[in-house]
Image 1: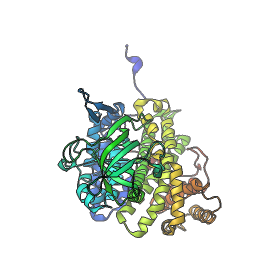
Image 2: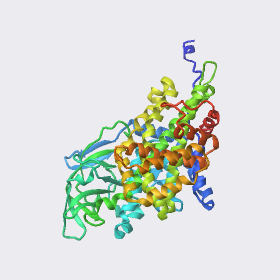
Image 3: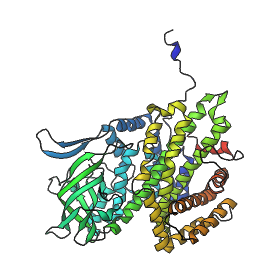
Length: 543
């Protein structure tokens, strides 16, 4: 009798023990679209296995544990010796190990590597986004190291390994290695040319001693770091190993770990260099040029990470509303809730479709595709990452009060949602980068216009948006003050063109009506009532 007041009814079952990959139709469709037929069976099997692991109760619990037990900094051992180590919960190592084993650092050496990695990254982000940082940095370091063939030959096999070999010891003795990076400083932030960390040449050619402070250094327990410092000939890129070849610790003084809004499982640090040994990567004074491809790769990972967070938020919202009853029926069948869910689903599918298209451009590698990436990556990074926070918040609202409770998982998504917009260059940095591409690299705009032009004539609202965009591009007056507006339109038109070509008609119709045709309000849930809301929501349901 005492327990009769605690009967649990009208609550959805947990969203566990499902295949995160195959339940995401937009993602699985994109993978099928961008891979050659001979790879499809292998990659689908690989991604489905990762999807089942990601959806399992066990792995989801690892994500909770890693988030609830943040890393701890130990600067000294019990004898007073400086060690500068970060301790992680065992769940962190399990997640990171599984991410490495899933090929999240191996894109550069596998057929169709960028598409299969992008899909895996999007899936894995939904478990716990924090371990995506070292995975992303390691992946992105490869093109920077390739500017020096000797360094690439030494380090690339370790970075692209699918073995997670933890512990601080010489990298030459490890089966796999991870990379972090240290670019920003207190006085400069994204303006890395204002860096003051000094690099003094040593007797051995190509080696230097670094002295300075890095305000943000990612993944401080990594095996190596790409760092910017001022050499005699200007800003230069350097490789800083955590442990030297003789087994001694390099001078890598961790001052503190950042206390962040979200991304709490991941260690972000401030570090001091004081005679720290480093090897030059690329030529002196060419630091920005050396790291530019690394920055582009991490920016694409920001797009993928935000797409993954949006997908998980939408999946949770649709799942909840599929089971929850109110006012005489299922929430998912109520016209107004269905409008909200359909609107959220559109945002998620558009983000996923764009992210996978950019990954496919990396795999293609042609001059045309590289030109497209030059303008599309910063535009996508600007827009998709900014859409993540409102999607996460609205999805939490779909769960009502439950969505504000930690156990639902939505608060973790909400806290994580602004991160990708801020890291790797915030919104203004991306918009200004788009302007640089437009002004200095005409081939980038040509590639973009050819891409969106493939959908011309298929939807009058898209055609009108392309025409308006061309008008705006022709007007250079006050262009910097309009950079955000222009970047947003570039991203939306590209998303619309891809959905018109590849998405189901009801999805493309709704996107073009609301995002390009202006037939929607400012909040989610304001789609025209005549659209096929039910079909859009059903496509997004994590069945």
